[in-house]
Image (cartoon, rainbow, N blue to C red):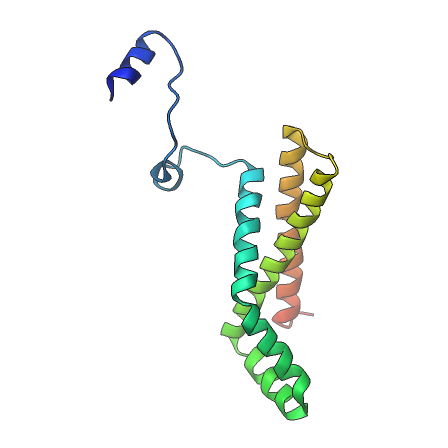
Length: 143
């Protein structure tokens, strides 16, 4: 412990320090608020959609080329690994869309205070996961 931290503790002052990556991941005592989680996932989902864009365009191209290529496309998509990738991309799209709608409301000066921001962040997480669950049920043939 540094001398400045000891001095601050003796005088009863709060100790303000930087939060490093180890505090967040390993020790588990720094909890991210829902709005931070939604913001991080919004960036991750956007990056994932951007990186998988060639795969999505290839799937679209194969489905539209001819009847034979559509049958090939159906064979590729029926593989469980491809379904998991498509489900992940579906989650990325749905989360990115829901978080984008939340940001549009925030751009119009709605839900900017802390409580409303946390509430809308929770709603984004819930709605995107429920919609992803519906896509998963449809993708894996439940209905």
